[in-house]
Length: 162
Ligand code: DLZ
Image (tube, rainbow, N blue to C red; front, side):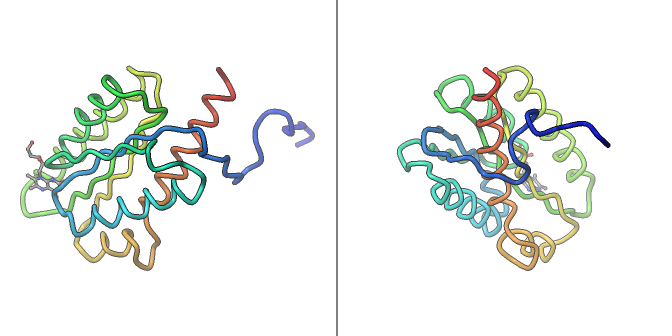
């Protein structure tokens, strides 16, 4: 491909400074042994990249299903530049898993488009506890860190395009 993409985007992988960015984190209490770790990773990553404590709001909701309305409250009542939704749904014996996953996926997507603000999907949907542990500071890293980096990149993109 001869196309010159140089002026079309920021460097791939480059993490912008989060110094002047404001974040809202909504975190589910269900499976809090996992979601607390996602929160820790997310929060520390935002700070590591320059965000300041007073610009990070953390609010808890009962379960992953409530992340949608929690994110909507955050978009409606605060001045944040991005929202990060953290939760963990673990497959059980009933179809509850499917309904929660479907509900939160559609819900978060809808908040993204309704408010013109990035809402990051930091929800683990796993077959078992071990898979969740592996992704919350275990052998597959911490999805909370990844959610924070995604939020920073999306705020930078929005700032760039406004
Ligand atoms: C009810 C329920 C179940 C069975 N499993 C989970 C789960 O694995 N992870 C999670 O975050 N929440 C779960 N919940 C709670 C729902 O998200 C929600 O809080 C309730 O259905 C009330 O709306």
